[in-house]
Amino acid sequence: MRQYLAILVCGLMIGVVQAGGDINDEVMIDLAWDSGCFNCHDLERSLRGPAWLDVAERYRDDDEAFERLVETVREGGSGNWGMSA
Image 1 (cartoon, helix red, strand yellow):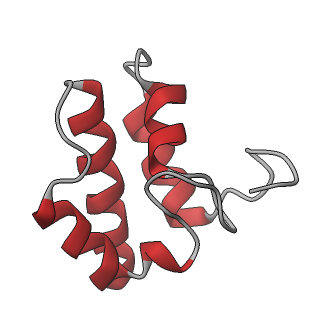
Image 2 (cartoon, rainbow, N blue to C red):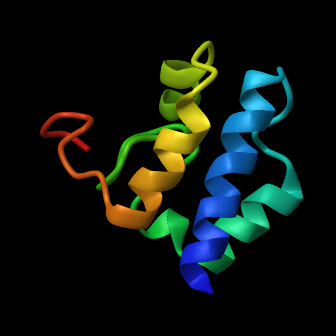
Image 3 (cartoon, rainbow, N blue to C red):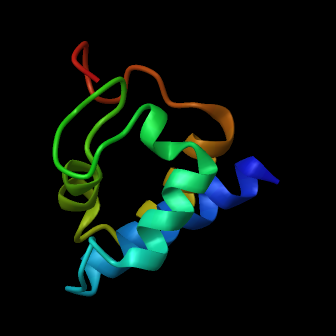
């Protein structure tokens, strides 16, 4: 269940940013906290994983990003962001 929520949150946050929405949406942030996303990610700065804003910016114009990111959340994606994330 936790993995499903993480995938849902990832998709929602990226979709909202791609559509020009607000990444600080309270519902999305609550889902991310409940799913454990913030153990590795932050909204604005890199921790163990990239910041949500950095992910959204990288994939903003990529129509196929959602499917790839869902797979990355499911399987893990170490190394996609270099050594810092």
